[in-house]
Amino acid sequence: EPGGAPRRRRMLPTPGELRALARLPTAQVSLWVSATVMIVLIVHNSFLPAFLDDLAVPASAIGLIVSVRSAASVLIRPLMARVVGALGGRFRTFVIALSLSAVGVAGIVGAPNLLVLLVASALLGLTTGVAQPLTMASMVEGVPTQVHGVAFGTRITANRLAQFVAPLLLGLVAQAAGYAWMFVVAALAVAVTAVGLIARRRTFRAIDGTG
Image (cartoon, rainbow, N blue to C red; front, top):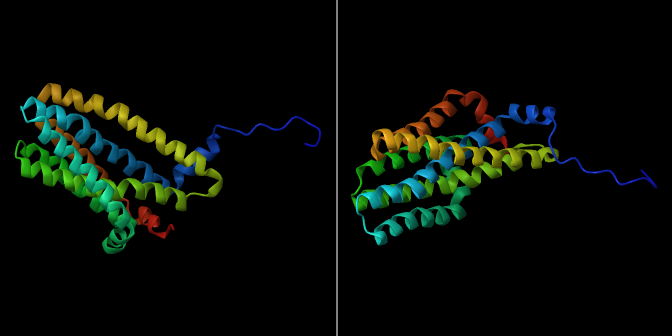
C-alpha cells in the first residue's frame, strides 16, 4: 500500500497449493520418478564402491566403474529430446528408463565381473541421465507458473527424503542378508515404480501433453 510498510512475500506454500500440486499427474510422475532415481544413484555411488572394496576390487577399477556411469549420464543429456521422441513420449521414456535401471541394478549382482559392471554402470548412466532432467522439464512445463517454487521445493524435499530413507533401509538389508540381496531389493523397488506408472497409465499419460 502507498506509504505503508512493504508487504512480505509469503515463503511457505499453503495447504491448498500443496493439495492442488499433488493432484496434478505431471507433478505426481515427476516426484515419484525423481525420488526413485535417487535410489539408483545411492546404490551405485555409495553401496557399490563399498561392495567392490569388500571383494578386494582394485580402487582404480572402482573409480572407472563409477566414472562410466557419470560419463554416460552427461553424454546422453544433449540427446534427451531425440531419445524421448524415439521412445514415444515422456511417459514411455520414464517407464523404459526405470525398467532398464532395474535391470542395471540387478546386473551388479554379477560382480566382480568387470565387463558386467561396466555395462551395468553405462546403462544406469544413460537411464538416469535422461530421467532426472526430464522430471525437471516436465515439472516446469506441466505445473502452473505461480506454483513453480512450490513444485521445485517439493521435488527437492522428495529427493532429500529418498536420500535419507533409502540408505537406512538398504543398509539394513545389506547387514541382514548381504550386498547381493540389497541390490536385488533396490532393483525391485525401481521395478515397482515402473509397474506403478504402467498401472496408472491412463492418468499419467497426461505428462506427454506438457511442453
